[in-house]
Image 1 (cartoon, rainbow, N blue to C red):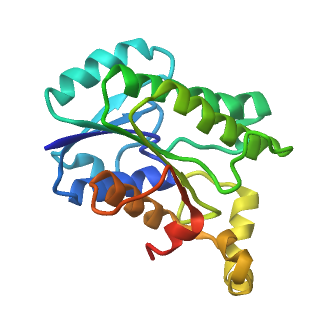
Image 2: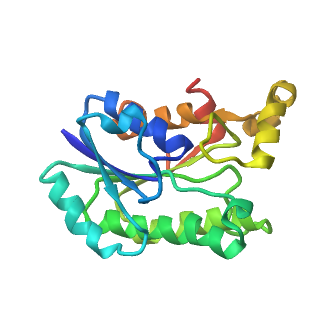
Length: 228
């Protein structure tokens, strides 16, 4: 049986991911890394396959031993669902800390723990040469991760995520409310911008991790949409 290590497990995609990993027979145990302040009251975290480990995003070195001890001799897959917005983070610096620094540090941890694969939620339009700060940060993250982890990597690049968040994001909420109006207009070359359900992103991640489907390094939004 395989071991799954998930960071960002209480977020919109992360919660769905934990649920789908629980149902996936090839993963026998799941380690969910969560901030102490984040609630894990959802029933999925009470499943016997799931162990919740509080982590302050500071003492990264302590995780290697804990993860290796938890996994034992089973193959390990690392899943990263970390992500925020500049408005939510409060500044570009804080945004970069979450969406770049923490993700790259998680990739280093995957390397130290000899994980067989690393699956990361990135974003549509990620490009290290972009003039847009958000897209550039995501692109730089993808590049840095590839320098830190030399086994199999998959980057998932979803568009606007649909689903019920615990945290309120005003701009995102407006876009979601308007989605039924503008989504039918996104056809042809614009189809790649269609919003995607968070649960479908999670399902795609599990199918790829369980090797039930083949996937390239970058899984674009259009490919994720097919999961619906």
